[in-house]
Length: 73
Image 1 (cartoon, rainbow, N blue to C red):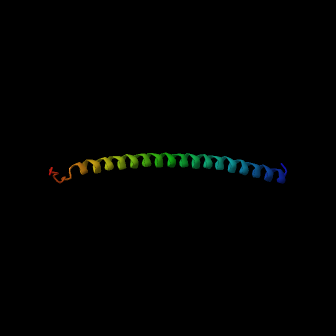
Image 2 (image 1 turned 90 degrees about the horizontal axis):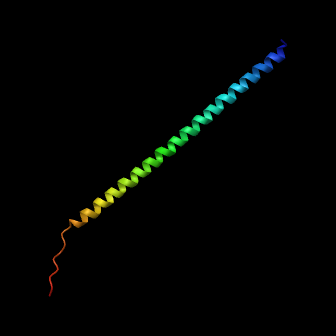
């Protein structure tokens, strides 16, 4: 086989390998970004629930405060 043809085929193989590996890398990055978004969404939801629970506890603790007696005059 002609040397330039061998070099050309080698270059084509390397390019196709690069293309395949870069597309799998892009796929991995997009899956990673999707997982990160899901984790963030779950943590935001969890923080929201915790805030809601702590707010309810604050309201309930307000009910335990002693109120001054109101006497009719």
